[in-house]
Image: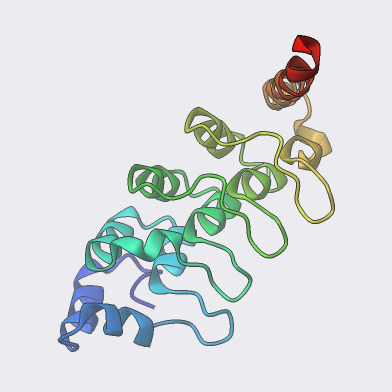
Length: 174
């Protein structure tokens, strides 16, 4: 498709056939997964296409596909650093979870994309989110990357301790 090839002009031409740009975007959705063009562009790490699509539909960054996955999760799963950065700049919800409970950090970490994981952490994602299997992102780190991902494990432990202390604090005052 035009998005996979990074052909912004083709994408603009497709969208220009419709007077309503949002209708054009919905017409271009992938039927089986209900992925929007933004989902496809984000997963293919096509930030210029993502920017064009977000310009046409600013709310697109928070639209889920059939599985409830938002474009940021698919970009993180693919290790698409530039697309992730653009989506975060466009105020994508860094902690949005799919129907499986997976957030972008789960997807990036599970895929071994530690640079994307770090970007998401720096953007303020919640490290202690659980998916439906009750697993945190640090628990999805591939074994081959345990040494390089130690920072994520340590940061998650620190956040767990802060949450534990916050739960204890109200009881300590009584």
